[in-house]
Length: 476
Image (cartoon, rainbow, N blue to C red; front, side):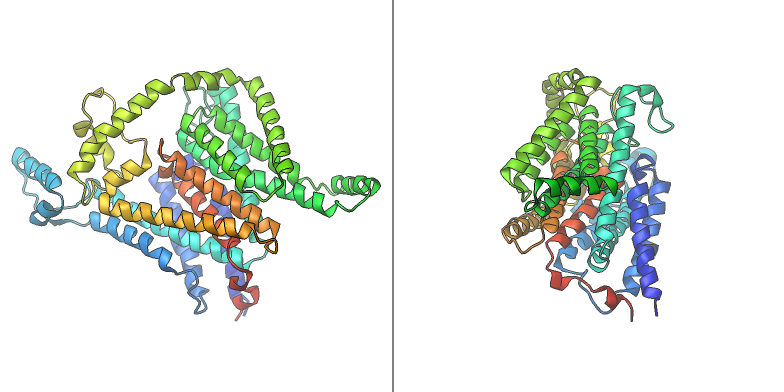
């Protein structure tokens, strides 16, 4: 029977379709758009995983325990419980409900732990879909020989599109964001918030840069023993067959970096610098090659940046002191919300509902719906125990990937491509996590999907060849 092979092709097309389209309509922030992607993943990829497990549970491991606990916890936060039980778990939440009962004359006796239970319930299904998506990408990379390469080209292609669109917006702000007007002069692409836009690009450009560098270095190694005439003939043959992977990938990476700069997201720019330094340190290339690529990038960014106006970026950082002090005031004022709900949290998506009550000394006409620090906001939403579990799991997982990557970099028998792609994917995830210290890029569904894609690529690059699934096993 060839049905499983056809299903596998369909799953591959579905993953690539999700990667290409999910950022196009504001990063899938609208509930209807996000619900469509959740349905496609749960019904399409979830069914494919069930039909193609072949008794092999490699995609289930101890690392899935914490995500499952988190999903279950979000559902529990959304289930009404007796008010007396709420007194024990979240006294301040219970007191607010009792006050409403007294003032409004209502008789509410069953309430949720979350201030926004419906949103948390929907978010639980999205996290389940993201987890299934991660398993699907890993399985496709391990079982289909060319899938990872196709996936990388999809990621780089959509990143380059977003970057070019963002730079056009910076030059001509009147074109807006799709059908929305954009009063500020900044690169946004198809994403409403420039900080989330910068987070997305910081995940994608390392992959483009590393892929281009790999094609260049790999060709240099193949040509190392050839004479000058042979090298020139090989170069002419490359151009005759339009073998331009290296320059196109490096150009795409440069465009994305340029768009990150002109997004004017200070957190995004600082995260970009950190990712760039980490990428140069972790890639298994010679020092001369790294310096050469660095010089090319500096010249590219300086040249095109000067044409667009680097003074805009510099002036943006001149206001860093005032903005930083304002963010610090938000952090400190939000600690009272964490203190009052330290055990169970206020629920996902509930910060905006309580910020007018807890944020003292801020303008009454401005709604602060985000803390601008994902770690602090998640601690407020989930409670300290669950936040510690989640952050500990994240730290342990990233440490495991880093140690694996550093150890594999020392083994020359491991293919250069796997080491390069794995290192670039890891750097992209680091950019995602670091930017969360100052902004809310994690709240964009497209960014979570891309983060899971990079994690799957990195995990597969560190996986021994013996653990990869033979394509023949897909056909019973």
